[in-house]
Image (cartoon, rainbow, N blue to C red; front, side, top):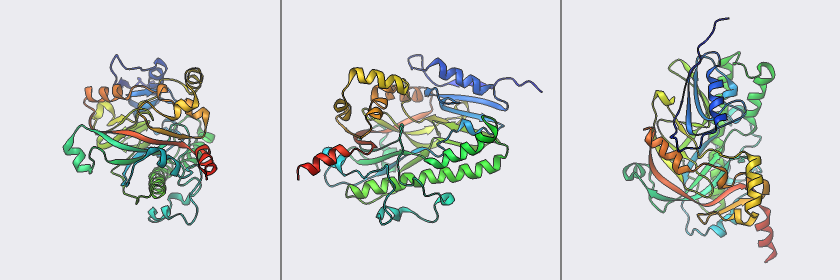
Length: 373
């Protein structure tokens, strides 16, 4: 067996950024895989299961595990026009996004053609973990010309949807790992065909979720101004470019998520080959879920976590998830964006400030509302 020299590894973060050594170690472990060419770590880099999150990895060999189970996961931004924006009232009107929409739900009108792969299970649902739907307002306008081209102005309201292919991507990865474990795809073309269906499914899912929420809030569904997937593999320059928690940065507009208690940043990405044409996808965790749960319970009450530092509301019926996803569990989004700017990977366009963040259905407010009748 021939010996291969490890691929190059570059982490695009400043000394002031919080980057766990375990995450950097994972980058070097990936770099040692057969066929690997270059690993680019983003400033939101953190350890993942089997592969680092916040990394773009180029190789002559296709590794499904480097994409993971949530193929097609991404973030989309939809303009929404509301007559009155009262977060306390709007939070009560969010639909149950843990359940699929009813067959007669008008949100289904966004479907145009067949559902990819005919996979209906879970369509129109958000999922758990770091997935969310957020009603936000446009805050600072940092590049007026670009914002104008996107049709965004300070004070506008938008829906931000972060979700993926739900169980479909998991099925695809499991079918591979049951036969090949962490090894390469035995049939790259076959895997890519399934993968591409999951990517299309994830984008469709975000549109359906946004339509459900828009109609529930009394607004008409709109087309997204941004919709970028950050868990995928693409064939580029004859190589496989795996992205796990890294968004395409080759001239695209990308929403880089902060936390439910901080702004997010819509950026114009212009990353080159040294960054594997990629940018960060969010603030990135700085605490494991177990650490965030333990520390959060010692510092905060549930009610404190339902109202964020920016005054927004959180809809989340899962108390454990409230603590696991607390703003303090994540890195400072300003540091992540600053690193991208300093490395000439992206230019900020606007910030979005949370008004209502939906994580999972919360029956309590509805019960209290019914009790007042």
